[in-house]
Image (cartoon, rainbow, N blue to C red; front, side, top):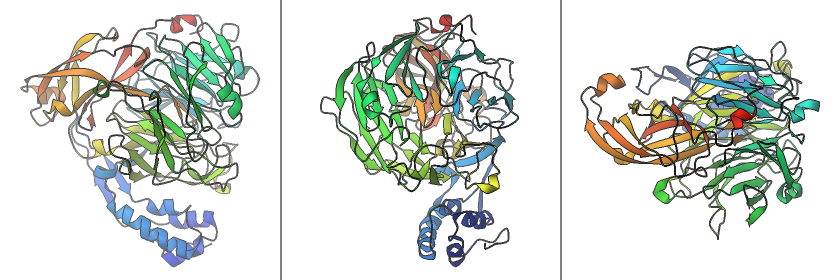
Length: 605
């Protein structure tokens, strides 16, 4: 193996020598410290810059994509130009902020607490842990949390009840396949509570074993649990099951963690494999068959990502679904899909509009951002979902802007130093940054990292998007958020400091990450609220917002969402967005708990 001294970047010829063995090439590139760094300096509290030292990581991306001196030369020419162009203000930046206790597989942002619950499997999980932890997004501290049966490949959701209970259902082996687990969030940002998971099969259990299911909150306040190595849909409370769905039966075994979205007319969009249907939300009978998406399958094990794009009164809540990436075969050399498909499923003449990503990806994460764009990250360029089934990680994030024309929507962003493959995750935090974590490509989490190409990953990153890295000022939601919850069509007045003084470019939005696992963001949503802006002055705004400029103040007459099909009952982050720049979110309960999901298991937790 060719060895190099720290601080010396390999030549193209050296890269060609290293490329004989992919792991050797990784070690060569690990020994390279780029000569230039970019540093930003923290400013006032609401200023958007953060302290960070960011180095170009294009060479690490190169490490898993070159196999010869000629290929290395071409790749150096390609990626060196990209690296030189990268600046935090344009591309954002990744920052390693913590070492976790577990290699997370499932995660959920806990309303009001500033915490993320991270869960890993028991069988093959990290030795010497209780296999779950809370992560504080404000201090980066961690707290171990215990649970009983194995959550491996389960589903979850946040209840719409006042306590924002988290439910986790299904799992791995024996009783865990029918388990219902409940966690009541506690603590506050910066301060942990002592809450633990509760589980008691005598009080609550699924009627059908489920492994790899998807949970979808419905307009009536109930939750559908779809699939999970079965074609049966379960809806609760009360727990009952619908007959087998032909879409799930026909696509078996390439339909685990199906993509599901509640549409604004109350129909359910479901994708399994390459098939998509519209379903009745009460019977889950098919209402319409949609065109097959081109190029290949998009659900586990050929995992792609899917998101319902922003619902807005500006276009009468037009529903559009975006699906990106996927796989082509069950061998590690099978190329991932580089295409995205976008469809308006309620259009009688619905067709997939296809476009290309800069990089092929299987197992991507698609995370909605407060400005309505979509962050695409994580995943691999070849293989399929599963342990040791994929390689050539894609470490460069991509921004998808749905408001731009086809061909101009994709833009590469910053590059992470960390390969994130099977079981990687990403979540939008309250401050508008994105938490990036997980990756368990090895069946045994405790394997010696030196013996595998990609070790299981405990490091936790934060990605700061360009809108926060460019040094601008945040809007501030200063008052008026309804503490007792937001009702449908409710009139309210929010007090907002808007730095731009341009309300025509501002939005009030509700957002939820949902429950995240296996590139599936269950229930993820972004909805713009109707708003009328009235300027009321600017004096005193600088002190209130802790900014150094005189910020215009507005009273914003906001109308709650029109109905529960547009915003299902639940807990949402409420953001003010000034152009691209988001405020820090405040949490609000929308629509109450109409079906009593929280009360259903109140004896359990």
